[in-house]
Image 1 (cartoon, protein in one colour):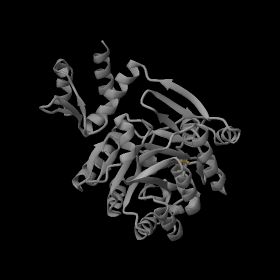
Image 2: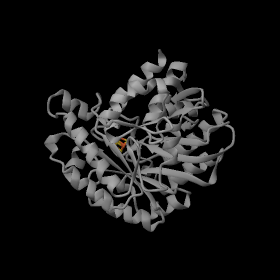
Image 3: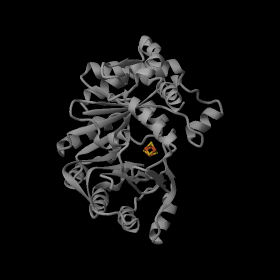
Length: 370
Ligand code: SF4
């Protein structure tokens, strides 16, 4: 069965954010027409069969930098092979500075019905430190414009655990996020990657990572705030109001096949993972030359599958079925309040447990591989 979920990596950004190590291409003028043509060519050169799809996700990078015409052209290119079901979820990642009445209406006309808005913080000083282009005032304006255009399903991205020296008021950021009445919230703990401006500042001793206690306290504060407001904490980093879980992202957590297009995009056919070359220029050149821009492949071994099934099971509220023989292993976790075990034998992490996800998944995997 061909994949029914499609991811397109749009690499263009206005500039590099201080913490970002994604595969991006900083461009003042975005070559949207050429990019859409390459996506169409990539689909053709990889001999992707026609199929009906449940989700299309334009991620990045900054897909909203494509503007109205560019998003339309890329979705048209995808639709040449992938026909969305009538109720398909079509998401684009958007930065607030790219939202205007014209672009928002064009996105809706192109079939977009979900937006993931890169907010990150409502503190101007924090946004500047992150090298974000927008300021806090741009966020409610962007949201109102999206809603006026008919986009109801809007997710908000927030970054927590920024260095203490920034004196960020996390509780205020959470309140302001709630005041926007999003349908969905994604939370990301700041990580310091080598090769980024933040990595260099840290290596020079100019910036200090937030301590682990702040990471935990901010995660738990967000958990309490959003769940008290009626959001379901359905995946370690994601909260949704009823009926608004992200269907595209859920396909990754369920381990179902998905197709990845564009530079650095990953795909999975149920047996094998593949990924495209990461650099935009290299991907562009390979596709123009009539080649499949594959950068690597990996067939999942039984060990990989075991690790993934445990990890993916534990990261959502669906949880993981455990055997009676594993009860002894998980009993201390239950006592510590990190997990619950339902009568049907499903193990589910609590918010405290999600903070220890890697360790819990590692212990279960080790037990199952013996
Ligand atoms: S906008 Fe997103 S992808 Fe682009 S540099 Fe910033 S964090 Fe990275």
